[in-house]
Length: 497
Ligand SMILES: [Zn+2]
Image (cartoon, rainbow, N blue to C red; front, side):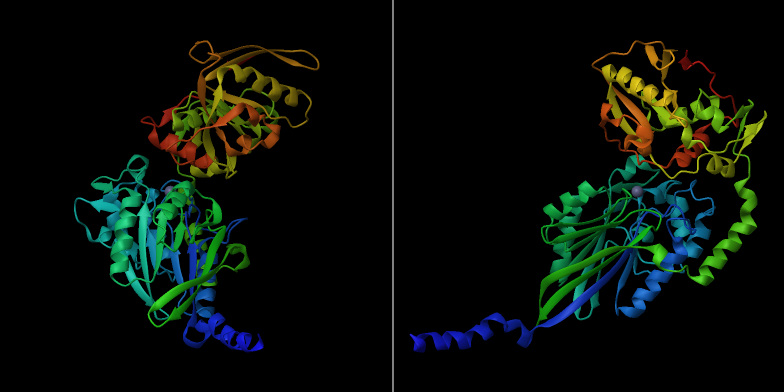
């Protein structure tokens, strides 16, 4: 027996460690961020200067790290600092990036201004599934192969085809994401790519689908839905780094290389707050100087309101307010929803304004400072009564209650000492509520997630093709759409009691 076993024992090390003799461990490093609506440093992010610092430090530490941006840099009306595309690009050029990809917001102002502006960009923009009828250079680069640490790495990008509806992408069309990816991965493999990275700008569920449909993609670095996520789908890793530079995604792919064959070993991945990196001094100073020099523009009048109104918290947290109703109207308008609501606590200016009132970007951001997003959901007609009953029972017992400012609905109720009794709920146009109808409902994600004890159990999730913008963006979006530069606030009367 011993004689038979011995040769086996001798063979075991050779069977277990064949790679140690011939194969080499190799690591590929990736740094990724996406969806930058605010370039400057803030309470949760060190902005562009923090991202620059992070990339510089990591690139110095890890040889051959690849840094990328996943789209949405030009939300034209959002960041108070970003007053023009060329200025954004001047700052953005300071980053040591290997790849940038387009988000839907890059096309907000149309394709031609983007093409003009990006003439000044020093980065490589991958255009992936974007088809340009005018055949401009900016959209020609579909994929790239780079040799990194002796490994041929293929890079390509995919932009959600919803961009057609979300933006002003004239002259462009978007090939189906999956079929483009399938074709491109095949092309990359034919050209010898041993590791494949897809930069995507689409929803997480679409990334999951892509990972399942095209498993030869090793790594998906994404953007668009502002979630911070690390997910392994089969052997594909999906990473998204949230929004506004709150995080950067760090990924290391550990590989084994034996002659020409590359095999995968394991991932290391994390989302690191940019607050951990002190802002790059030079860029930080340049951006601050620009803000100081251009501060005036923040105070330019973008709309005049022809009524006096106030946003005192003693009003907006307790009673109907014409300004709050106006904000609720902008939510409803954004999604063309049946109804909309904003809680009084979201309005923070605590000021009195006399007619005529000049509205500026600065005023909007002071009044609506929260970065909560406006989302679209649904509610059954028969649940509206329970919803308001629950809101008002909470309201009556609190010192700082949640007052529901409405759009699309009128509410009649009677106050007793300890109770508010809902007497009638009607659509603003007088229509009766139909108990079995699903009404689309625009409100903040703060309320949807149960903030201020909002009874979110009466809502159902609904999806919209529109990107959920933050509260102030929705209002600025509405103002931008107006053909008149003077408006009146909606009259009181949505609450009758
Ligand atoms: Zn986007």
